[in-house]
Amino acid sequence: MRKLLVPMDNSDNATRALDYAIRLAKGTGSTELHIVNAHEPPIVFGEIAVYLEEEKAKELQRRHSEDILKPATEAAKAAGVPFTSEILIGDIARGIVACAEEKGCDHIVMGTRGLGAIGNLLMGSVATKVVHLTKLPVTLVK
View 1 (cartoon, one colour):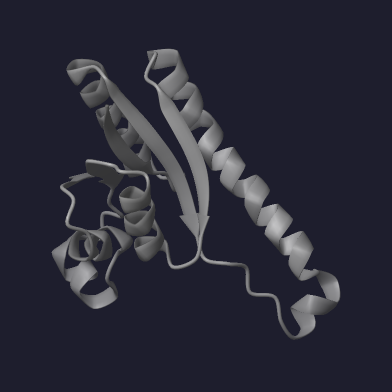
View 2 (tube, rainbow, N blue to C red):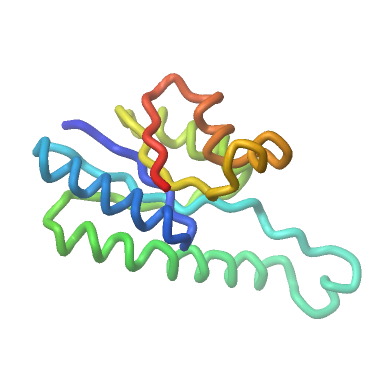
């Protein structure tokens, strides 16, 4: 079975990437999506720690990730495409690439931030980092 990894970040481009991945999966058959939300671990220090414990921050972040994943998994389910989902914590680009490799994915389909060539040169982007870190084919969707 072919596997596509689809990172979701609550952006319109990520939603378009999911739609594209669903169309690919339906068109080729025997394809499973692995839908992920990746984020850095919460940073709780100084005065923030007085108001928000680290465990509470992690719980809030987990709930936020679930809220991002829910519409994506519902879309895959409605389309009749097999899928799994996961929350990744750590360096976002490296986490996406490592997850794709661990899950035996054949392809990564992800949205871009839409900064354009100059913005990406100055700021970098998760999509650019993923392209450089992985040996898998990557389809970027705007």
